[in-house]
Image (cartoon, one colour):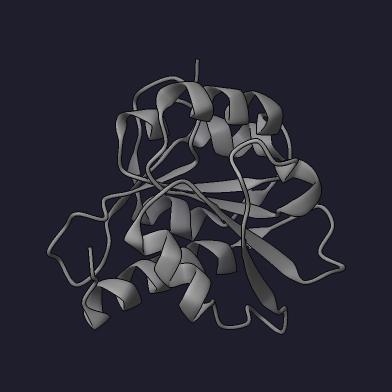
Length: 157
């Protein structure tokens, strides 16, 4: 599916906005945004990249679903993924300082931190926040961005 310029910008702006309000325990290196799963939005993030965040460069890379995400990624954008693959991946990153941004799907509610509604026609991309997953990750997220998202009500089991 080809994305319009506005769709690419909206998702990229939303992801960049979320990342810009997050702080990791170790910020001594370039922020590594990894992309996994299928979808045009993830591919767009790979090809377009993300502008630097507060003097910190951002690099984007594709990782397979079975990659050592904790060692390679500070943030993970998850496109379409089957539930079994997501559960396996989530088991490895749960409680680790990896911020997750997922496209809105049932799997996102299973431990995803930020769930984007990429199918919207709005000029901004709405998202839900799983506060339990954010709290367990060790990534500090400014309360201002948490207030922008709707609170998720599902648990992370």
